[in-house]
Image (cartoon, rainbow, N blue to C red):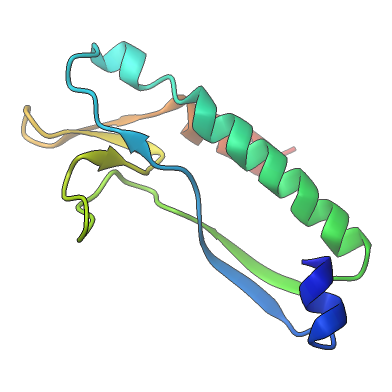
Length: 110
């Protein structure tokens, strides 16, 4: 972000997709699959560095998490999971909030 600020005269920046892919592992019980600590660590670190960049004058206008739901990806199909919400593909697409969803909610309200 600081490099972009310096090299391109501090343009407004919108981060439109940011997140972590995890391999779909249907052998895990759903309660275990909801424990997405890798995503939480990634987002926590990334957002702390974004805050530091903002404090140093980088013109960050928007940030969008990738994605709210596990979804179909053109190059990987349903083999990866991206979202805050676990989709149970075997049981009528039932949805469960992952631990990262609760973490992000707390982050936004703190």
